[in-house]
Image (cartoon, rainbow, N blue to C red; front, side, top):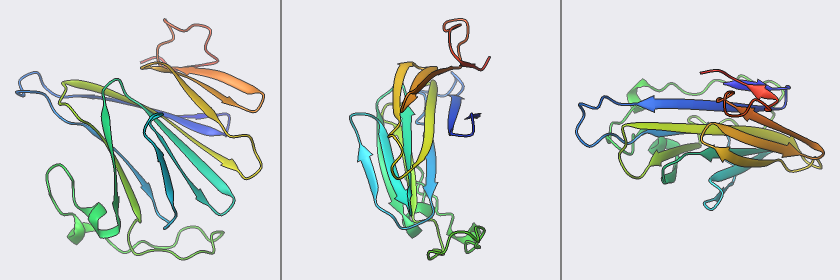
Length: 177
């Protein structure tokens, strides 16, 4: 995970399963939103956003494979959609941790967003940008350059973030794998 200039996060999940496993596997990327707020899912861009008070958070997921988006809410979020395993008995009530937030706290996470590849694979990468921005700020734009590189623009600022510096030596932010 990379925290870029105190503004946004870029995460790379590099997943694999043994070639001995017949047919490969389905891999999930899971994101939680505690508060009961509306989510806006944009299938064509592979992104979703939500707003808490005056901050909107854009979450852009990049994957070479076609993936499904599922928002499992509240108690349903405690059940794995692939295996059916129910984790309810291991979950404690959420404790208030942010004294600056004055809204209601739910007992369990409201949104449990599962991003899962539709077709089994042996290897898969999820490259994700999480970009919060305040009301009145420019809306960020995240562009996929390849499976390991994004261009992020917000207002007049644009930068490239790559996990493949050999392919993109011009990138402002480079992480060697």
